[in-house]
Amino acid sequence: MANSRTEALQAAGVSIWFDDLSRDRIDSGSLSTLIADYSVVGVTTNPSIFAQAIGAGSGYSDAISRAAADGAGVEETVFRLMCADVADACDVFSEVYAASQGIDGRVSIEVSPELAHDADATAAQAKVLWQQVDRPNAMIKIPATREGLSANADTIAAGISVNVTLIFSVPRYREVITAYLTGLERARVAGHDLSGIHSVASFFISRVDSLVDSKLRELGTAEAHELCGQAGISGARLAYEAFEQAFSSERAAALLAHGANIQRPLWASTGVKDPSLPDTIYVSELVADNVVNTMPEQTLRAFADHGSTRGDTITANYRASDLIWNRLDGLGIDYQEVTDQLEQEGLTKFQASWSELLETVSQQLVEK
Image (cartoon, rainbow, N blue to C red; front, side, top):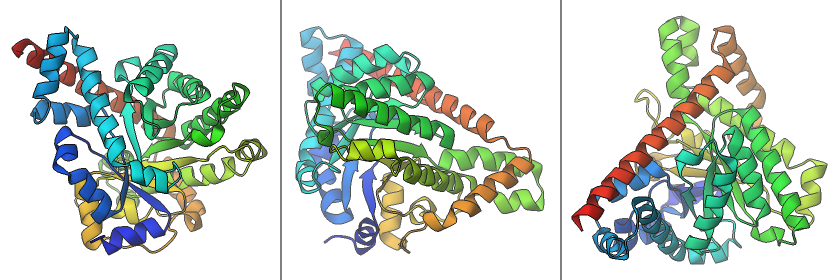
């Protein structure tokens, strides 16, 4: 039976995506259960998720044996495993994809984080992954680094759906939207059907609070204490304001008139890391039309158990969100410095997970 709390969240305009994937989730029917019981309509993955899944070993032995027999290298084997999982998950979501006319039912797979600062290599690998997964409801994840902006535009221009990841600041988010519109304009010139190209922009939440709050605790003042736990949500709300502004522009309207889709904001990193905060705060406080919230299992189950939906909790809070960041700036917490640090830390984390994943598969290949 479908959960009433997640149904209410969906009815308020939020697409619930699940931030995890493994062979076991697919084969056991767990993924199908999430669709039926928790209103889950998509999946996101990243190198850390696959490192954990493949490192656990469950369900991958036969595929690794086949790769070893074929003489496949380590990276080729890793991509075989990931693409197989994503393709099969896309099949699980095929009915959701059809029912939503391509908006949801999406499963994301990320390019190698080692390519984050190489635009051409990122765009080339995005095309290869798109062809390997070979499902219309796949999305290729590309980081929103400076070089990633160009790769995003190139990938959209090729008619490929994209999940832009590792966005921490509103200025960078505006650049992501610009890259999307540029890609759509080029896709139109190339003769692609714009209605078949979809994109989301993954704006990270809890990591912002973790860093900002650590700085606030160092200050130790009453005002600093009062501002704890507010930076992430305020930044996301200002990102949604940027989304509304961008897609009501003349440039966007011209593309939408030719069948293009909006690029929906996606709230990522929504697992609460501070135990003093409500465990569903990054869900209930970020509700509005046309958003995606990708949740780890703990957050999803917490919301299904006791989460509340109060309608739109974003658009009436733009000026209050501005005030939060103005106050943080007054305390010496620099927005650009914080978000630059978070982007680098995010890349470093994914690169470490990627290296761990390659090492795990390398060892298993040797054993075969």
